[in-house]
Length: 203
Image (cartoon, rainbow, N blue to C red):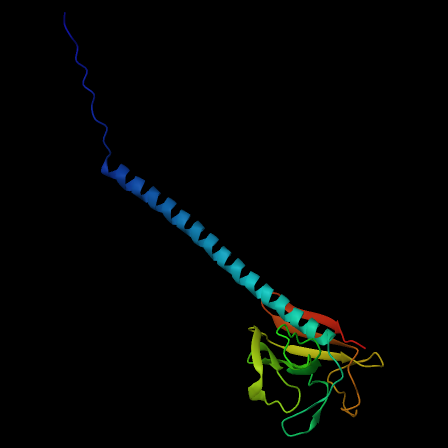
């Protein structure tokens, strides 16, 4: 009986097929890398945006707390001159006497504190002093709340319900004018853009 022997030829690839396969693999790899890179960039941008929004929220929280607890207590500067309890040029700085200084350690001190807000070199800063009278700028504790702030505009609601651009108003007695009824504060901060908040001042 004759036995038939079947010979199977091995499968091989031509040079052209190898080149085409490598090209396709390269295109798929580049596409996948580009997609991954885009996802990573989106995630980084999202994290940066989230941190910026948190910083804006913290800034507004500080402002509302301090203004809501402002009191009509003038101070004396390092030269002994009386300064208004609440003052601002309406553009770059606002100072006030704050009555909510916490004292968890039970120290023998007042709960009053002098605070100031300032935009300087695109930084929105909060300054605070441990004493009201005779304090100097070098004694201030400084906290940078926001970066890249383009503009700060503050307006004040007077007792006649009119908005003025500085406090104390021009041609008023700075030591007897008291506090405004409310403030309107506006600033530009990325990524939100223009932000305006109206905060009432206690009677």
